[in-house]
Length: 204
View 1 (cartoon, rainbow, N blue to C red):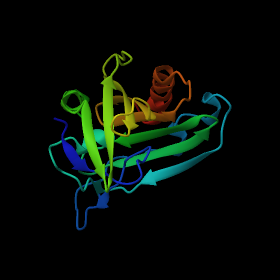
View 2: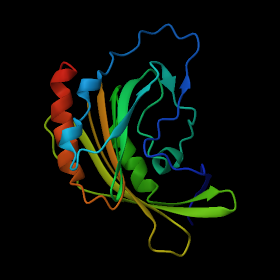
View 3: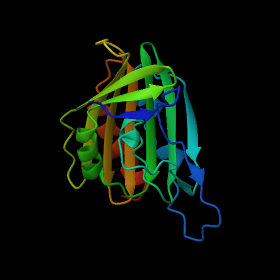
């Protein structure tokens, strides 16, 4: 039987909802400069985009050990994080990037994703089925990688909103590239390009 959890009405393309740590005295991670993000010209059609920054000391508010983080695509761990990203609208969907200075265990997240391959989420009176399929991620020397597709649909339906995610992590850097809809993008190639672009701009 599929697990049931509370689901927000709107599924954010970058699920980085966080709460600031008050009174924290720990040194924040290094900043992420805007130039480290994937250049607009690297995206087919060079669409306009909206950039955003994550506060310097966020912590995820949801700490349950169930499937919530997987369903919401929440790859940022709790604790101090410095992150920057963008979201852009394409002709047939959306694309977003999140680049963070944080340590992330993608192997553990992948194992949790396997346990949460199909979950029924409860959005008030309208249950939604989250079906997640792990794909073969791009191989990057010295980095952990993750690739998966998620479909959000109504119970009994075989079609719904498609989300694809590719994540790359090494040392204190996490990159998440995600699209929604039928974008026909080569997300693996874009993620590798974004990783190679960000590296020297983050001192790697």
